Amino acid sequence: MSQPSAPAVGILMGSESDMATMRRCAEVLDAYGIASELAVISAHRAPDLVRAYAMAARDRGLRVLVAGAGAAAHLPGVLASLTTLPVIGVPLAGTPLSGFDALLSIVQMPAGIPVATVAVGEMGARNAGHLAAQILGLSDPVIAAAIDRTRAAMREKVQLPEGFSRVHHPASPGG
Image (cartoon, helix red, strand yellow):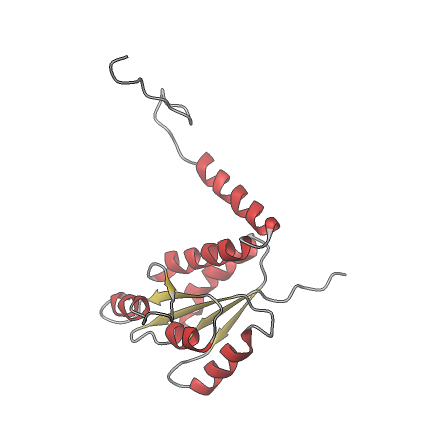
């Protein structure tokens, strides 16, 4: 029986209520064969735990962190301030501003402490998984090949109008 691989991606969120959305990131990573871990860890209610997690992440073998946060959305930025691992922020809806507040909070990081920011909610969580895979694929040809296969499958699902082929060369002007 083979041992499960150590997680390469840490998926974090500030509240248990964010789990349903952030699981979408884990599902994408699973499809690429990338091990991940999910944890509820609050930048406001448990800053000492966030610090300990971020400081130990690289030594534990994590290579990318994904952090979902709503409202003030400090978790992604706090993580980015404590590690040089890539951090992807997922703004989460949950306030009357429907995630716009979280989006602005995550995207406005000071120079030198970047957080890659994706869309609000489930689409963002899924794209965070794809982006984490692309980061890992830079140094892992197996992951890169899986991404290529996924993209090819997405292209095949596109329905083209009758008369167009996948490679269409329009007539040259004046010709």
